[in-house]
Length: 231
Image (cartoon, rainbow, N blue to C red):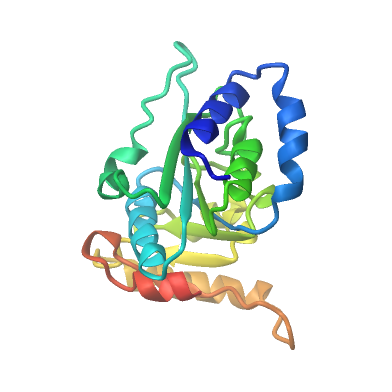
């Protein structure tokens, strides 16, 4: 029924790996399959949280209910996580049609938590039209988002490093949409050009074939967020 308190409690039970949650998930599963799941991934400091915040605002203007899962890296020493991504989304805290949950990776790989898939499934079943999954910063092998999201947005910045290193990371291969955020900085045109050249080798034009777009954004000043949302 979309009860927020029940949803929050069940997410906690899943995170704690309580033994009886499997039965609950089995009951909930038939109610899934309606939400569109968007994964936002990329290196640390690329502005994923600010970008997510702006996308939430646009989705709400269009009357969509939005669920957000923010994954933060857990400390290998204490096991704790700051769970600070929500701070950038405080303007939505009082909106009853927005549900934001931060979870730690807790040893999970691929920029995700071990419970990520189940949590996104719950948000889907709870009636959210759009579910945004923001990963912890990804590295060279952390591509777990590929198995969960319907649409994967890879966020890069002008300082993302040389092109060969990005190709090595395999990040380009998982993208449905490439976004160069903070495009008001020097070097943004260069990285956009390099990305488009790289995509020429991997894009195979043809009827019904999705060609990966490269979108320039500047989330802090709300530049071209609408174009990204439409893509």
